[in-house]
Length: 75
Image 1 (cartoon, rainbow, N blue to C red):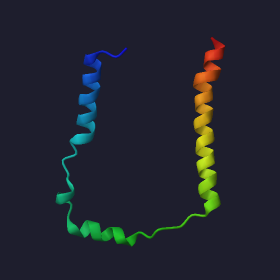
Image 2 (image 1 turned 60 degrees about the vertical axis):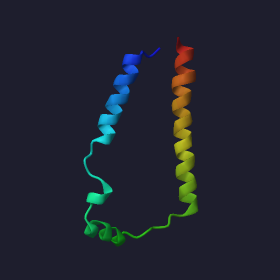
Image 3 (image 1 turned 90 degrees about the vertical axis):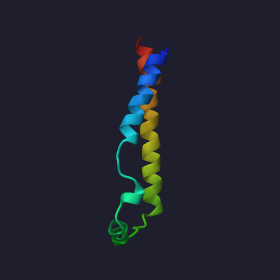
Image 4 (image 1 turned 90 degrees about the horizontal axis):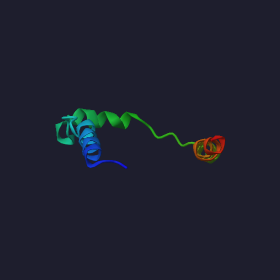
């Protein structure tokens, strides 16, 4: 089990890694937000989206099988 000391250490590390960027949305100059309009949305074909989703789910399933089923049957 995890000790309280380890949990607090992990929590503090997470806060330090994610919360100390020093830049807030109010500090971003207006000209940077205007530049985002130069990007255009590219619509992807439905078959490609479905293929990528199925491929990702297959890889996740393969990893789960490898670490939960295959590795436990070797021991």
